[in-house]
Image (cartoon, rainbow, N blue to C red):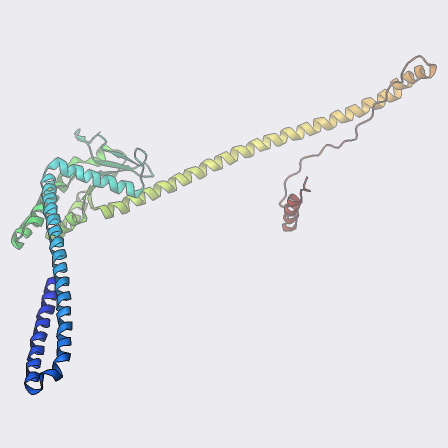
Length: 362
């Protein structure tokens, strides 16, 4: 029930109540003197009059608002009818239908998280095993190097005619035509032999249907359409099913990248370990050379003290030299050798951490 009907009902009820009140007033006027019972009735009538005036003003306001809203709804409906007619006219054009399917396919691919020129290529050209040139709408590359061909050129003129039909029989006939058109397109797609033009490729072709309603309506007239496509290596996919397929592909690509990164990290670790081994050998040989040089130095100092300085001190004793010959000191340093690393105990690790905090770790 709308606002106008409700206000009309309230007004009629108020008028009926007024008539009843007037009847009661007349009856009381016959039985009582005029000055005794008419004052409460006048008050009630005044209150009822004010109430009816308020209701009338509210009804007029609501009626005006309702008229304005109905005008807006009419304008919107007219604009929607015009836009729908323009859209239907545009979708009847083959290249517009194809472009719309390509746009829908691109949106699904972007939502799936695939990267252009890395995970997929749009409209690549190829030549099948029969020597004919083919150009699908999309070629998706799987993690193992295989490719999946996707075609989005689906006829749906019969579906538009079925939606526009008012008669149930005509609608059923148009739906059957739509199913036959889709079946014929499956045969045409199978004849193009896309997988032979893009090797290595999966042994099937994905037929992208831009709307779930297109495929659902076709399956109403021909329930075995999916099996018919499978038998010809054509998989019919709507945006929801294709999105699930492409998300699986994107997940496999992420896993492949993670595995490849892990292999690279392992290779870098191996190279670093080999270089550390070489550097440890150099340090060991350098320590041995330093220890040997220190021993030779101490031997030379001993020989110098026992044989050369004895004669030099004779000059000092005779007063020939102005200053005494200085005596070299032997080296007593110890060369630290490299030891294999050992796993520290939990207590040692705690002490090392405490030493790092106190600044006492050398």
